[in-house]
Amino acid sequence: MVFQNPDNQIVSSVVEDDVAFGPENLGVDPQEIRKRVDDALKSVEMYEFRRKAPHLLSGGQKQRIAIAGAVAMEPECIVFDEPTAMLDPRGRREVMNVIHRLNQKGITALLITHFMEEAAEADKVIVLDQGEVKMTGTPLEIFRRAEELKALSLGVPPAVDLAYRLRERGIEVPQDLLEVEDIVKENNYVSCAIRKDSGDDPDVTNGILVYAGVSFVSDDLEQDNREGRAEDETIRHVILEAGEGIGRVTQKGLEQSIGDPAINLVPRRMIRDAVEEELQKAGIDCGVRVMIWVPDGAEIARKTFNPKLGIEGGISILGTTGIVEPMSEKALTDTIFVEMKVRRENGMDYCYVVPGNYGSDFLHDTLGYQEDAAVKCSNYVGEVIDDAVRLQMKGILLVGHIGKFIKLAAGIMNTHSRQADGRMEILAAHAAMAGGSRELIRQLMECITTTAALELLEKEGILKEVMSTVMIKIEEHLKHRAGDGLEIGAVMFSKEMGILGKTSDADRLAQKIQSRKKKV
Image (tube, rainbow, N blue to C red):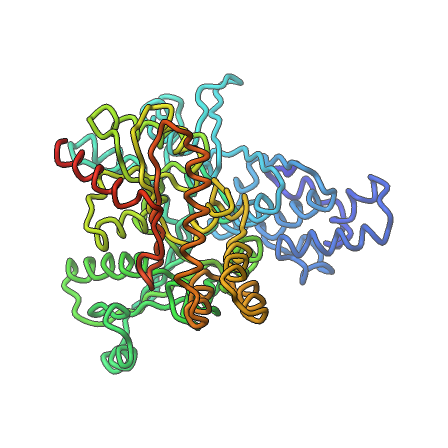
């Protein structure tokens, strides 16, 4: 437990001795204590102060020493009893950053606080009044009940309070507001951070701070940055750069070129459009530089698939809409079922199925089909087939990128990488059947992306034959899952090469879907 006043918890005259106090009383071996003390101090960024006297430290630093003392005992959970109540804003931010880092390492943090900005950073909030639970839910769920909180003499974060007052005056404001943190303003420069909310599918990046800094640039520097850039790399006055914790692309086959920051085109465009809009509103006619960085990005990225994908040194900024949609397994499979049920009840007994936005875009832009006749299945191909059978659909046509759909050739019906990743094994097996050389098979097995593998197959002259046998296996596994009552087919594509293959019924199913769509 960590108390409100660190002076009530610190018992030694030297920092490292104080951190060692808990493990010593637990009878931990001296050598292990030494390691725990060093690790705990590093985790709260106080290692360089290990031989200092606690009374010479600031309030925030002393509170971090108290936290280190708790961490050194290796608890599964730490209770923080208003640890920031006696601190200035900088000290509060330091302590909250430490709590988040500990939480990301697997330690459960139970924070008792009257600061609503701190409650907004939690995964779950419990509101107590006189020992009785009054509310429980996510921060967004709790802060939507602003009137009830005010009745309990509790506030809401400043952004939420402002939105509440605007709504009272009849001004429409979105319900789901993000709290802006760590704002820094200087001459011709401002930066701030937003804490990532992964929705109901939290991953290792959930809760991290993503920073953006904006500064004005001279006309000469703006021109230098424009030279040699592609048209979509510079939009009018906005120069976008990536800093600490943003990964760099090191392999072919990803959306960005080798050496570029791993920020996809859609978020790049969204950032630039938003900044350009604000420049126009303010009547500012000069260049600005936007820097994006994530302080813990490099460490977090090691826990992701980024290194395997050829993204080194940090996390990647992906996304296609900027909107968090429900992605937990139960929520998503329920959403898929409902979406297909709506199609069925509105006369669409045949429909497309796509994993996500890539498939939707390919339907519309390349095949010329209406994407509103499609159901999104994410990674749950098997579940969407089961839903189609359950709803007595007559037929479905799956349209997807090779990165996911190649797995169907091995009967893998959940295409998420954490479930199975046999992409190169499948391609290598079919290349061998097509007469590929031993060297080709070795190169395929070393590929990181399907794009690189396709280039090898095309160079060898066996791409068409490989895709033919792959589609035969995909059709076999899909029909086995669907049974006799559902017509099913698939179209597999890549962004670089277009359509790679179709099952035998794909064109006929597409015609039926289009005819149903016209009737609806």
